[in-house]
Length: 433
Image 1 (cartoon, rainbow, N blue to C red):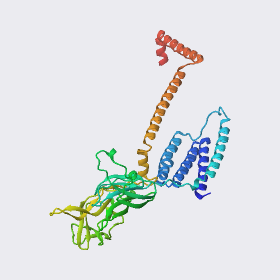
Image 2: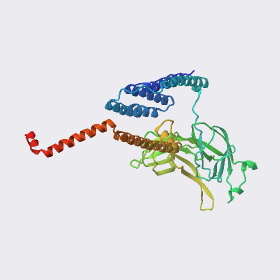
Image 3: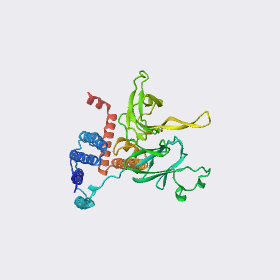
Image 4: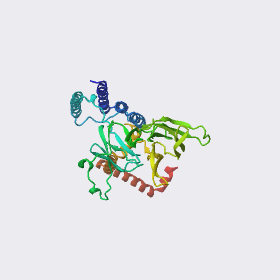
């Protein structure tokens, strides 16, 4: 058995034992202490599941605040001892203990034979997106093997992130269909059409990747792989930046940040980035930035007045575009293509973001249904308690015959004394004196 499995069995045994002692203890304070031990065992299980936030919430809220409230009520009401008559069914406690022991034995056998310690969490499927920055290529339909992942992707556009199974694929790019009715478009895979691009790609689990479709100086297709970090940022006032050099040529480019107060000394963010490469992901403070690409001392592109949102990932691609000339032809010039910012929403398991996302999406409907059931249960319990209180009040109003005779005798004595006082007021005055 693995260490995790041994720890789980030991802590599970402590949790079950503390829960049983909480139920059978006749001292309310001892019962509350056993409940605290049980809650601490649950927090330890959360730590084993790599969910430290839930573990701290379990300790702080349940084992801390709520149990302090329980102990305060117990001490305030003086209910530290549980009294009462003997149990009506004394055989229930031994039967419950026997059944619990049998269940515990079966559970231990199942856990040991199932080899749960070797189980691993299911990794998140990789997600990919594609950017089209090849000015000489038409709009593209992109396929990973036989599955289309982007449709009618024009120059300068970027597709949304799409999930795909981890593994090796062939990236195929075909010219997008120009028919007005999409139903009239033939399937390029079924017709055996020749793809414009056919390149191998490999997708790894737990990754987010952007692929930039560019071209080399001689017109050959070039695929640039850009690892994209979408994990949450700890600082609320920061954002991430990745830049790609898709400008054909052998001269590398550098990305600099211009300072409006001191334009002669720019800050170099990415030095000497060659063609077909992506920079490392930069984490920058929030605020308006002035970016420029340089080849030597010459500025070949810029992104002025860039004001990114906080906790987002920015992808900026330096590419080339076709522009018409005065003579009626076309020429190329550098262009900075800014991809739509992507929020950093890849939550880690057990984090506050992950818990909030799961509660407000996957478990929202069950959570609301349980809340409605609990509300109905509380209303029903109040109504039942109210009826019981009314019955008790009615029973208190019922007077026994002996008490009724005593009350009548006392009432008759009072009446006789009042009559005697009225018939002899002088005697009443003398007695008063």
